[in-house]
Amino acid sequence: MSALGELSRLKKGAKGERTQNKAAFVFLAPWLLGLLAITIGPMLISLYLSFTDYNLIQSPNWIGLDNFTRMLHDTRLMNSLRVTFTYVIVGVPLQLGLALFIAMVLDRGMRGLAFYRSVFYLPSLLGASVAVAILWKQMFGTTGLVNQVLALVGIQGPGWISNPSTALGSIILLHVWTFGSPMIIFLAGLRQIPVMYYEAAEVDGANKWQRFWKITMPLLSPIVFFNLVLQIIGAFQSFTQAFIVSGGTGGPADSTMFFTLYLYQKGFGQFDMGYASAMAWVLLLMVGALTAINFFASRFWVFYDD
Amino acid sequence: MTTDIDSLPIDTTGTGQNRPTRKRPRESRGTLAFSRQARVKSVVKHVILIVAALIMIYPLLWMVVSSLRPNDLIFQDPSILLKTMHVQNFSNGWNALSNPFYRYLLNSAIVVLGAIIGNLVSCSMAAYAFARLHFSGKKMFFGIMLLTIMLPIHVVVVPQYILFSQIGWINTFWPLIVPKFLATDAFFVFLMVQFIRGIPRELDEAARIDGAGHPRIFLRVILPLMVPALATTTIFTFIWTWNDFFSQLIYLTDPNMFTVPVALRQFIDSTTTSDWGSMFAMSVVSLLPVFLVFLFGQRFLIKGIATTGIK
Image (cartoon, rainbow over all chains, first blue to last red):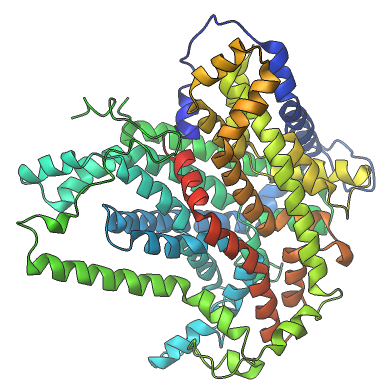
């Protein structure tokens, strides 16, 4: 069962069994300590700091909602929201669509499956690294690999990374390139759809398109949903690629200034910790709200067979 | 049409057994379908897949080849044919930064090793409690644990930074290792819970009848049986920690303490750098451990993703 399935099923379950509180406490002690000291405690402190002007040197002063009103007038922040949302809204569906497409091509015990799966999966393991971000920066440079290849067919490509209108696109492409891990999840999900459904549909004269929409999609929808939720949450937190490709600036002209990159600059560049905390909470609320919307919308398209 | 899905043996343990749809004759072997048309279709499909696979790994191949080319050739030749091996890039890159590169590899190795041990110990303990013990508030705690998987790190990173700087842990590896001993990578707790649930309870019962308490059941029965889950955890922790940039960037500012990702970043920091070959050489060096883990641990990686991703 996926983490999401678990969450929605927590209500059900047996009651009235003998508890083993003592043993459980011992086994959970590290996790509980971590939850309090590393997660919930810092979350609460960060909530408090978001209402202060803390800068790491002077003690924090309560300034009410100033940080949040300041955000509304911070054009760079508003721009970073636009950049981040563009990245998520374009990148995630492209990546998942490609993952599903390739998974469907690879399904059903074809020859060379293991080889293709490995090749398509490898980039998603390396894609988060600084090394690949460096590679991307060079590939999409003015004389980079991409333009060298384009030159072979007589096209003079722009400096993709140095041009504000294409820089974000290059980073989105990097995200799409890492479609391998959702592809693995789709492959595992496709395997659990009984072949007899397809055979029955074929006998009834259903074409490929109909089989996809009437069999594959409904039965795969919980997995599509799982991938969608996790990829959106993950994409909102992307940092390394934009940081490396832009050399830490979010440039050119703030076109790759992700929300997390701006947060880093404010918090760890200028040590404006109060403002950075407020930004972090806005990020949490945005991700939370989007996930909630996703869960709500899932009622209309996700099909649970049990 | 939904009636018999429930009765299908669904593979929750990832052991690969009971997979009903796996072994099935190739479609093209049917007497009707085994036609020339089906064959042509299959060939076309493979050609497209091979081209797609080549496009996918071409950037990586280009990087490896570029790490063996002299600087003036890198941005002129899009092919991946090597005429000469310019191995000086590796020795130049190795010594290009303020420390020889092995220093960064060593630092990364320390952080990765600490993170792996921490995750193995703390996550398996928590997973045993969630999978096998009954305790008050279990559902609530389990729910909280699942929610923390999805929590953006940025919400906690500022106070964590303040906390760790106040106890003098900036420019040490402790902020990167200690949280792992406190099971903050809840993803692995969940992965192990899933796995333990697939281990027959009769084994626990038998040990209990023999007089074993929970610590002994955990150590002698459950842990040896969950080796595949531990392997998956080890491999994922290795790759994620090795690649992790954000927290290492924040906590490590002293060049002597730099890990590989933070050190690599220096290559692009100095805008005057024109030694692309060295930069690519060290990039290749930094990816090599991940690639090796991928080669030898692929089975666990794929199972790990598949079992936590689907029911």
